Image (cartoon, rainbow, N blue to C red; front, side):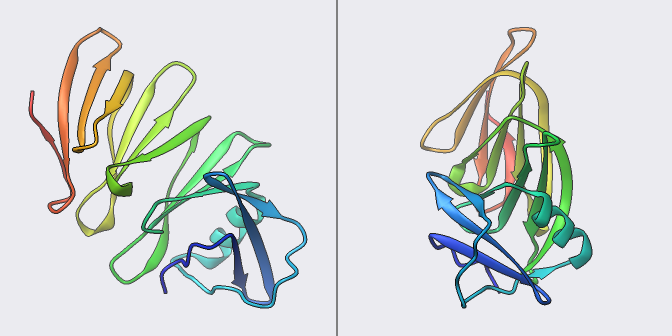
Length: 171
């Protein structure tokens, strides 16, 4: 079951329910989930997912609902979940970060760290790949072209191919 993006998302983990309400572009934990409707999602490791969702104070969701980023501000850690072809959310990685941005229809994720930026992209079989982890600047055009400059001031242009789900170098 794919995530239904609404103003409030209430997820059920057995008898426990965890709610997030939409505030701007992200969801923040709602400590008073006074709703009767909830969503049951499939997770590869339900106890781990419950632990992460329970710890998280904020959640970011890609436009398609296939990438979930849970942010635990207390520890400065983010937990990334990606949905596979069987519509099961699997835990991929936890990273320390300050900010995430979705681009290219939600297929490219820009992680903004204190001193650099990194790109993740959704590849074949719904896997999340790290694509260069030390970019100084990243600019993404509306046609899915990605212009990057690394810490040595070398620039390059990539294209995220949505249909083949891969990153291509074009210059």
